Length: 143
Image 1: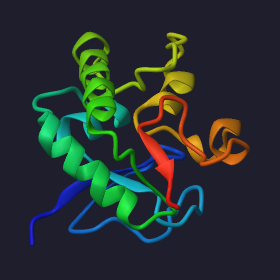
Image 2 (image 1 turned 135 degrees about the horizontal axis):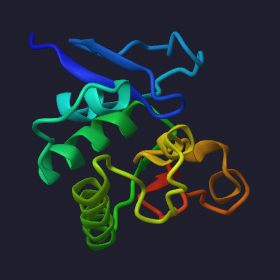
Image 3 (image 1 turned 120 degrees about the vertical axis):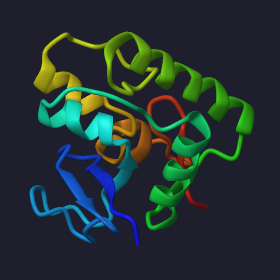
Image 4 (image 1 turned 180 degrees about the vertical axis):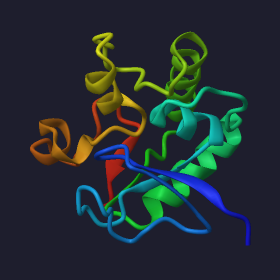
């Protein structure tokens, strides 16, 4: 099996292996890892860039990420396509896949909190709203 790069969507811990840890060793959140490109992993840990996951590969990585959690990728494919275009435009402009619905602060540590997928499960749009969704609606609670 081929080793891949994984990022904890809560604390941005980077893991390199054939599978992500079931429990993040840094923040102790279960099932919190999403697959990222080697370039994204290097940028987060401060080591430069080279290639990125293609949009279809990123969509597949997000679907695999959601499979082990209480949420899923929004079934509205048109909305997801629009949001992913925003994510990739942010990566083109700023070097990381920042959420398309949130504004960067230009503070590196603060902005790492809004790399897609962000830690949306703690926000009121997910916890308090009927149906629960992340800020932009990329992820929705399973029904």
